[in-house]
Amino acid sequence: MTSLAEAAVATPRPWLRNLALPAASLVFAALVLVAWEFVPPALGVPKYIVPRVSDLLLEMARMGRQENLLAHVVSTGSMAVLGFALGALFGAVCGYLLGLSPLWERVLSPYILALQIAPKVAFAPLFIMWFGYNAWPKLIVTVLVVFFPILVNVLQAMHTADRDQVNLARAYSMSPAQVFWKVLFPSSMPSLLAGLRIGATLAVIGITVGELLGGEVGLGYLITFGEGQANTAMVFNAIFLLTIIGIAMYGAVAWVEARVLHYIPRVEH
Image (cartoon, rainbow, N blue to C red; front, side, top):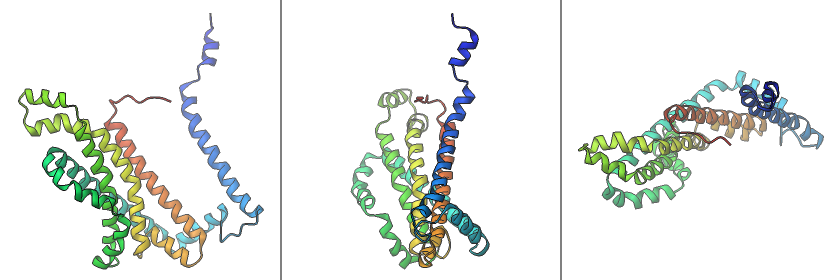
């Protein structure tokens, strides 16, 4: 019979399993950074093509002192969150309304499909001509980019709702509002939150496009400015900070999802 000591050795402790994956990720990141620092100079790659990690850190410090970096980060982050919130709200509301009204869905579907197919990035110059070089063009582009994934996810969830549960609720004389809030809305939550995760990443893309095409503040503007100055390190730093904002937004949605959908079992791989 296996002793207790042998069983303890054979079965990894939970805290060791929980630390293994983050540790492996940190080791991999460290190896990438070390390679980034030493491989390009060893291959003779100039700094204006691929700057070293130390060059990026020096440029980040300079941007903080001379380029008012914090204001650009706050502007991009706040506008991304606002555009994501508005796009998510409009997308969810439209998805639920169309899901509850098959007639209006059939009437509006061709126009929604046409607007979805049209590249939202192409609307940015048009919005700039309409509203000028201010926050509105990039905000509207962000809202449009976020709107459609959430609309499609919610509408699909309404189509695939359990009809037996809906019929049972109606058999108990529930009103249409009660059927929606007690059956349809809860069943749509996984799809809605999946759409929100997608929208959180797309919001950063939308705000960056708006800032690239017409803006005087934000990380997208710094990318354009760095390109004009042939400052590759500035462009790399702006992209890195945009990635951090996207990860933070995605992580916030995932955190909410884990608590809202705590009753759904997750498969361990």
